[in-house]
Length: 413
Image (cartoon, rainbow, N blue to C red; front, side, top):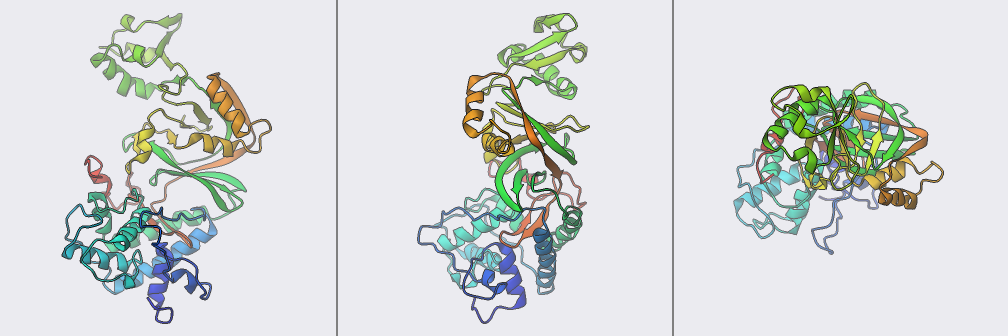
């Protein structure tokens, strides 16, 4: 891609793909120049945008992406890849050539990277860049989920952008100097301060049949080493069936049954009836087994949901993280809580770690409650991070079925 021969389409797409880095070019075109170094190997992490998803800059970049993708569609878009589901560095064959061409179309790979039929470090880096834009693990290797995402038709991508730019306009005003955004289809939490993303956290969000709600609220309090009171819906849907199959489940997981006159033993309950729904089920504190882990982030809302830690941290390495009953599990929760409490006297990171280690039930009131927005955005762009797409897991875009999520049961995803 020559500095002097960039077409408007190539410049916009390279800008929005996130593949660009700075060079001595005009302000707009400099981001379209590909100068990524592979000297340290192709397994470098993909750079992440510092621009908040909900921001005027993101809105403007998304509007530009619509123009670029429409223009690309008028030129034929991209072809469907007819290649194997698995390829990685060292693979070879005509499928690699087709993959290169597909990555070049959206600016994930520089056209000057060659036409070799070998899956080299350049192809690996291009696949990583694409995977980062569709919310997949940036392995750099081709799998079924990546192929499915590559083969989403451009018309669908355009419709996603058009649908979501309306949502972004709704949130393009002043959301506060410090705020939290939880994007449900991305299963991702951003903390934002002074217009810049401070931290990012993978999240576990509601299943398709137990969806996390859209909400706007403020976070007033952090609960350390919490107990967990099991919601009535989970008692009906999960606990009763579990106890029918595994009578020792409550005892093993330190969940107590509380009735009007005190604690009740599991053996006293008729699990073949709805008797259990009349009691309170409360799990003891404990980061190794409590469903809330070591922290609950209190969020007032009519839905009874909140954010929390989890003992099952393996979910954060999954591409498909729609696993909860509506609440939101947060990766690296100590970093998240430290950010929430940074302006609250007496609650530095050392204090947070000390309280968690103590195992005591302690609440921390946030000096200035932090605005929190749970939103649903499946497509957006940022000037420094490319065009992002996520599956419409709850079918709110009206473009079902979601192509990648359909593979969630496959080990290969």
